Length: 295
Ligand SMILES: [Cu+2]
Image (cartoon, rainbow, N blue to C red; front, side, top):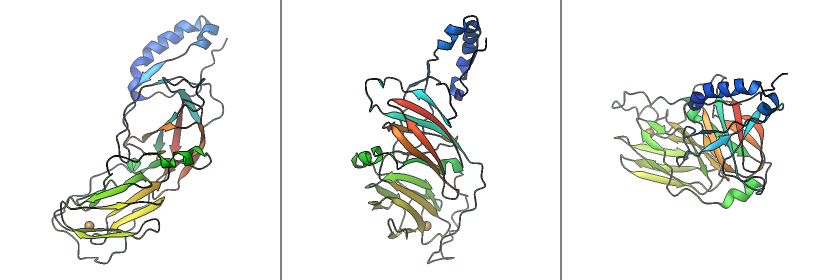
């Protein structure tokens, strides 16, 4: 008799210690196939924290149970502590990884008013190397009215920042909610002049020196490209959403969207210089979904 195994068991690195014991368990289970089929793996994990636009996502404990796979492009797990049977609106989680397989074109240099005048001899250091995976934003799109229902919920307590350090905007990509104010502190010992000509929000903060902070509030959804008039190689992108279901991948490409109402959504992986990838994802009440995205 053939023991039918689930085809997709997601096995994060932090859980490898439990593998030998499960193999032993599986071997014992072979003798009693019908029982083995009912065997349920309850594994706990503390997933790696994921960098978020404005707050660190706390590490929640989830219990994962592989579900027999159909021809879907994701697997599911059951969120621990949620009583999905009795609560049809229990929130779910989308977890996953993103990989970049296509070639990323170099950044284009912005038009600027003061070209050639702003090259600073003080700055010889190259910008801090950042994995391009950390410039990938994962977000939910359309289809479910749950996205609209969430649009009036609370904003972050503290303003997210885009710093100017070594003639580089840090972070390069920042996803925020509509209504968020972003601070732009100058950490360099010379002037910057942050501006945007994007239709969703154009602004010009003027020239300001080290330790000064100027701010902009974003009231409409859209993509805002940010530049510096003095240093044409400086650029950043702000993505403004009218819902809270977005996240930035970490340097390993892992991401997580929490507290998602049950429903069917399009999950989009976005990078400013790659074609976005979209996948349909269905979240059952209180459930989790594991998704792989490729750009
Ligand atoms: Cu500048």
